[in-house]
Image 1: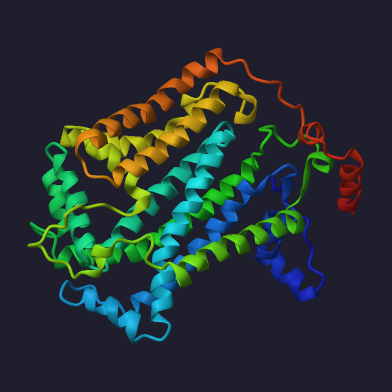
Image 2: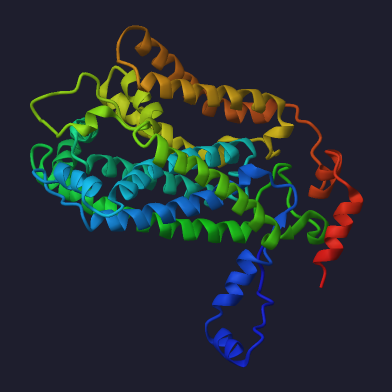
Length: 422
């Protein structure tokens, strides 16, 4: 979609450099002249928000690593040292901890938007799969980061989750021993998790580059789910139109982020993690961070340990198969009445699983978790059949038609198109 760059530097030095390393041409074609669908709403700004949050997590994480000590006898005290003695240490720690939560808020909205508007459909299958890989890397990074403070919930969370791999036949015990670095969660485990937690964000950044590259090859999806046919009528330049919209959304999101940092820094955490890890004292109720709760509920809903592990990982892996599970030729859920109802029920199921994951694994909570787990997978099972019998609404032929159908001004569109012409 970006096409060859038409950027020509004004200076002789710039032209000399551009002929040998066309960085500015790449930036110009990808982030300035790149054709962006006119009808994008604010749900499409979460890609920019996630890029900003990834940068914030990497920067704060690097500085925190300078003061952190990955040793079981000193990790908890080193975090307290950061909070009390390092200049702005409290801010860095709270920004990093709450940044993980904000990161997952943005990525869940980003994923639900892609699911609703069919952003996984051809030709964007690879783009979607790269997004699922980023999600998996995020979950691994967040889990390992949660272990580093070495509080009660960190230690016992690590023990519970890593023990799950022992359910895998034949190789499970070997994987668990490799993760632990021994026969229990101890200092080698903490060192492994610290090393990987520091490394994985850079891997995420690399896959994000591939994700953006794939996006610029196939082009952005849009609420109408139709491709750009006439650049002058269906698209606008990325800068300034999308840039300004993204910048405004980032500022609003950062205000919410800063609200948590300065006014509710521990709201999304767990009080038990302010108690030094004690292998001899099990917490009354072991729970992961809130963004893992739906998958934790699925894990506990299955009576078999191996079955629970397979269902938990399967609930994430199934996302990668969405491009082939959904047989409908219509991309956008806005024109799919049956899919739209099932999508919002799926959202409610995910929220319900999140609530159930935070509750004790007993009584009615277990029964409800099993019901919601069945509904979760039923959504994906039903997708092929919906595509076969669903009667969809008429899809606009072009993006311009979709805008005009919603009351857009033809004169305003023509004026904008004329303004963009050289």
